[in-house]
Image 1: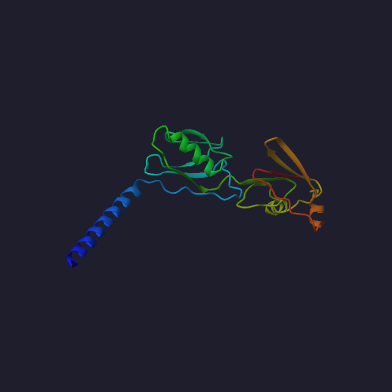
Image 2: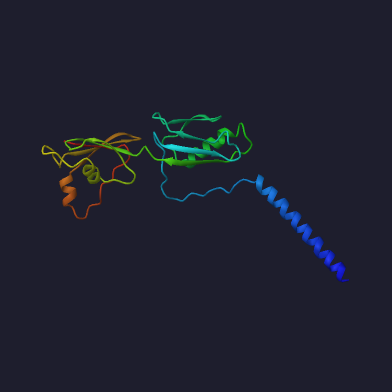
Length: 199
């Protein structure tokens, strides 16, 4: 009787091990879990950004590319893609759709490796007019500080922020003297590719 119970236990363990091995082999062919994104504003790609495109189990399709000044990138089999203005997730979905013609259920991941497109220009009556790379949010006061402040001929009440919007170019007049004197006012944040011009 005892031998019969041990034999049943051994058979159950063998069946369990075979099932576990089958699951391990099936897991190798399964897709990795999809990554959910948060509701926060996501970074949008721009010219000169470096992105890595990883295609799971397709090393010849995986590559690192730079977004060209025209906002496009070239990828194997996906050809030319508009990357500028898209989030990594949006670009990932477009690449997946294009590669579906050549690969069965491609799993694509797009990672931003280097951010180079965040720039502002500060021109006019400042000590160091130039194009400045930025890594985080910058106020108009921060931009003026990066440019070394006003020259002796500058008019702090005549600062203009030039901004390209989908509706066309926009001119925003900023009175720096009033902005500094106003204790209740919120800071005026610049957007990427804004131009600050001091008269």
